[in-house]
Length: 201
Image 1 (cartoon, rainbow, N blue to C red):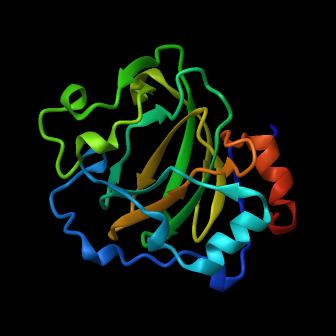
Image 2: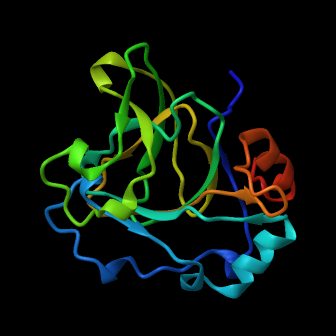
C-alpha cells in the first residue's frame, strides 16, 4: 500500500518551532476542548524564512492537545476528502500516533462551538473554520498509523485522529501550507515535491 498519509521530515534543529506548551492549563480537558491559534509573530524568523524559500506561508496555524490515555475525534479537515497537506510538530507523549481511517458513515459537522458540544473548554468563535467530516470509531476501519515525533508532513484530507496511550500530555503545533504566489492551499503531492530533500525515509 502506498503511504499517502504521513511522511517524516528531517529539518535542521534551528528550524523546528519552539512553543512553550506549559503556558496553558489543560487539566481536565479533552481533545475538542483545547484549541489555540498561533500568530505569525509567535514563531522564529528562521522558520518563516525557510518556508518562504519554498514559496510557502500559512494563515492557519494551530495547537491541539490529546490527554494521556485518550484519543482525538476521527475527522477530515475538509468535506470532500481533498488531499490537504499539513505539517505537524509534536511535543511530549513519545509513542503516541496519528491514525487514518476509512468510513462510509462519515457525517458533515459544523466546527462552530455552539454546535459541537455544550462544554467547549477554552475554545472561542474565532476557532470556527467551517464544516468538516466526522465519524465514530465503531463505524470506521483503521488503514494507517504512524508516530509523528518531532515533525511530519501529513495528509489531513482522509479521516484521521490522534491516539495517546502514554502517561504524558500530547501537544501538536500544526502548520497548513499555502502557496505564497497563488494563496491557495498546498495539496499532498505538491507538498512532498517541495519538501523532497527533507523527507526522512
